[in-house]
Amino acid sequence: MLELKEKNIIPKIIAVSKTFKIDHILPLIEHGHLDFGENKVQEAVEKWTDIKKYNKKINLHLIGKLQTNKVKFALKIFDFIHSLDSEKLAKKIADEQIKLNVKPKIFIQINLGEESQKSGINKEQLKDFYNFSKNLGLDIVGTMCIPPFEEDSSKFFSQMNYLNQKVDLKELSMGMSSDYLTAVKFRSTYLRIGSNIFGKRT
Image (cartoon, rainbow, N blue to C red; front, side, top):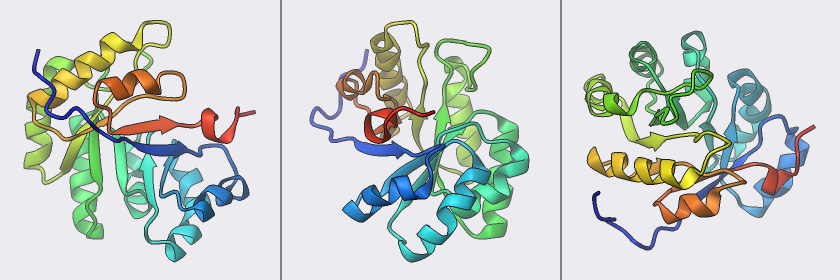
């Protein structure tokens, strides 16, 4: 295993605001929080378009699966995309970012648990997929994973830490309300926290 390059990492918290209405989120915005996460493109467009016009410092993160037919809309509103999972999607993002003159920061999603219901590339594909995406002109900043819910997340976070360093990426998106403290131990730089901030979703 590779040694940790940094020991003292202060991760950023993405407040996962999906399904919550903007009036529920405004107190956190007014407090000065800048990073928010949404799962669906249309919901994000409806909730955040006006807010982002007046608060240019807000970073909006797409943490859900991105369909290719939604890419042009996603790139207009999201600053970060955490779910790049196919060559087809990579090509579509590359085409649209040129048309729109934008360049979102992108995480490659890895399906470490090899779960059929989850998106993400196989870990063995990471280096080739990373090179493919970089050659398209994508700004790949890190990797992302959602570990199996019923297993110990630490072994998956450990693998992610290793894989991330293997391709020399700085950012690592992993850890949610239930396991964020474990994720911090393995160099996570972005924690996706929802219910611990906004409460349970109905």
